[in-house]
Length: 278
Image (cartoon, rainbow, N blue to C red; front, side):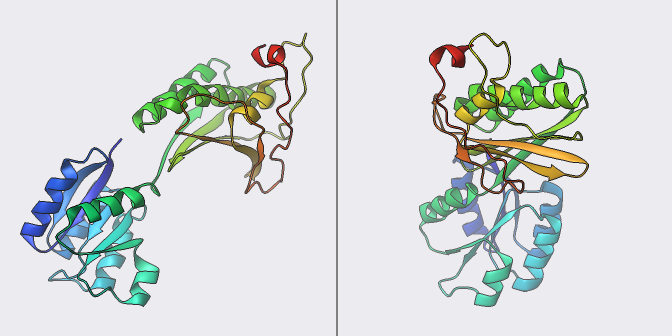
């Protein structure tokens, strides 16, 4: 899915040149153009862009006032300032925008910077699931749909397995509804399931004749990290996997950085082929 971009530039010729180049690029969708600060802030509020490409030298608003207004109108947007050869005020730069590009005739330079900055944009989608085992299929369709929408189809199969296990655990063991959130930042896909039950998930080493007990081991094999965190009256169980992987690979799981309970797994993935397939 292309990143939504608001282009703010006072010189019409420069704005037209950048807009044309950006519209030809598959990673960007220009959702608005402005030549003054008031219009830029209004468009930011309506369009809610992922990126704002900004000329600070606008005729009506000073840099700090303009940036404050844009941040208030579109708080989730990343702001890239395209300035004259002399860089903006250092104090302003350290607090108000995410990157700065020099205004030159080289449009490719600006596009390359925007591609790099665009990798920092976090996409997120959430769905509420009822306390019904049939909701697991809905959860799978939801996460696969987001992988396709965000251009990460290669991760869809692994993500479907992971979300099935996390959601099934919440619905079966907690016996309440849950909330599923799927997020993408760069090439990391994060799946989080929030429930309102007690207890924490733990890996069980199933025997070859057991029908159940391998779900969290599969999660640990497919993911680079997973863990749990307290969340209100319940908990959040999360897992992260590489969204650029073309195939699911068996790998030892890594401890989940950032888990406040320290319950990310360090269980090794030594499991024979028969029990993995089962």
